[in-house]
Length: 278
Image (cartoon, rainbow, N blue to C red; front, side, top):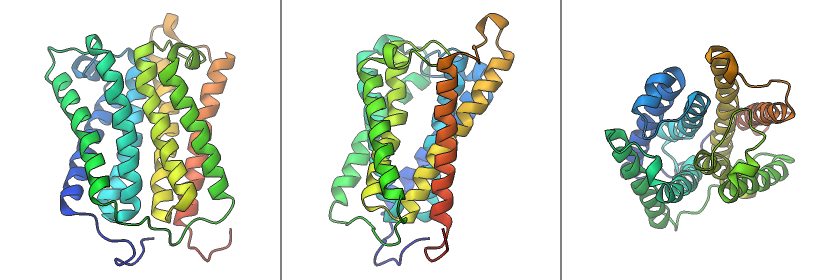
């Protein structure tokens, strides 16, 4: 999977330590929000409603997967991709936070910790990208056609939808199965923009470990979103049930099924030996 060390160098120890810390924080947040949403909502940086809580858990599980992969590989591929995705994800959320300070539960310590992390992580990610800017992308062992084309199209779709969520969340999230306010809609833009950036990088000059990281991100987001939606819908009061037959719900479910299938296919393609038949 990984290229020789001279072509795919190890990341600095300081970056490796940061990634381990990020992995632990992402996993803790994901598990709490997804598996214990009632408790998670009470201790989170703000108080998200049930469907939002499990969706946030799905988002953090998706964020955890590439960090875990980088923690294991500790190489520039997928390190470069993960740094760019982390920078995009955290910068997007940080900008939204600045405009919505009243959404946060300032009596909770986690709110202060959330702000510290979401200010530091973009700076640290940008700092490592600047420090390692002379390291070229690892372009050996790329995926065969038509994957580069597929990934560029995916980058355009994800980036456009993420930007639309930032600009007009009430309109662009109006088809979602549960009500999405402007704060949550703009927060959710990050989960589309980050893999959009990742898809663009991999589509241009990606290594197979980059493709694996991106594939796991998409597949995890799709799978946990679908499970979380069904789980939450089964336990909320009847008046809060989503309309499974609504066109918007079908579109939302289809979008996440596409993430699951496309991400799974991308991960499997990355794991397949380069000389194996397609």
